[in-house]
Image (cartoon, rainbow, N blue to C red; front, side):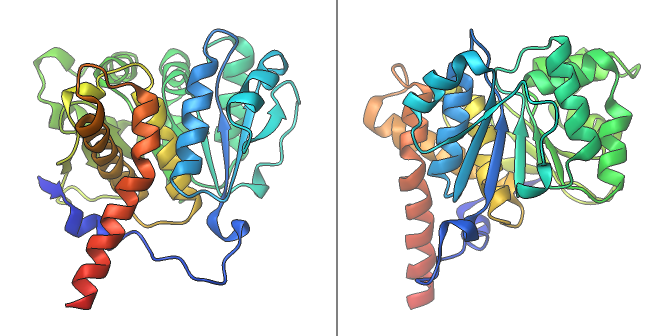
Length: 294
C-alpha cells in the first residue's frame, strides 16, 4: 500500500489564475436530501462550495427547497419531480446523501447511471439502491465506457454491496480484500471509508497499489461526515482535478484534524469539518508555494 501524503496532494491542487471566473471551476449537481434528511444535502453542497466549485446545484424534493435555499443561499435549486434533467450541463454529479431508497429515488439513480456522462460519485443511499437492485454491472458498464465513477462505501454499505452479488466472505476478510472485491465488482474508483480510509483508483491494474490515507481522527466518526466527503469529491471532480478521490480523502481528513485542534474530538460535528476545508486547502497551497520558493 502507498500512503496518501501532503507531498502527493500538493501536486494535484492548482494555484488559481487571476483571470478566472466561476465557470472555470465546475458545475456540480448534488442529487441529495429528503424531508427527514435535509442536513445531508446541506452538508454535501456546502462542502462542494468550500472545496472551490464554481457553481453548485441541489436537486431536491419541492417541499424542502426553501430549507435548502435558506441554509445554503449560494446553491442553485432544482425540483426533483422534474422528469428529465439535462446532465450535460454539469461537470460532476454526486448522488445519494440523504436520498432514501424509494421507487422515485431508484428511478433517479437509474437515470443518472444511464444518461450522465460526467464524473459521478455514488454515495450513501445511491449505493444502497445499487445493492438492493443488483445494479453492480450497470456501474461497471458505465466505467467500461470510460466514464469516471467513484463509490464511497463505509463497511456496512460495502457488506450490502458484496453480499447481494458474490459469495465473498465479508466477515473473514481484511479491509484491503474488501476494497479489491468492490473494485472487481464495479470497476469504479473505490473509497472504503473508515480509520485510514483506503482508495483504489478506477482502471487500476492488478499490480497497481492501494492507497491509504494519513489524515483524520476519531472525532470525525460523527453524523454527516460522509456527506461532507462526497460533496468535497464532487467539488474537486467538477474542477477537473486529477485523482480527485485521493485529494478529497486527504483534505477531508486534514479539515477534520484542523477542526479537532479547535473544537476537540468529542465535540466535533460535520459542520466544523466543512468550515475547515478552506484552511486545509490553503495549508496545502502554502506548503506547495514554500517548496517552489526554495
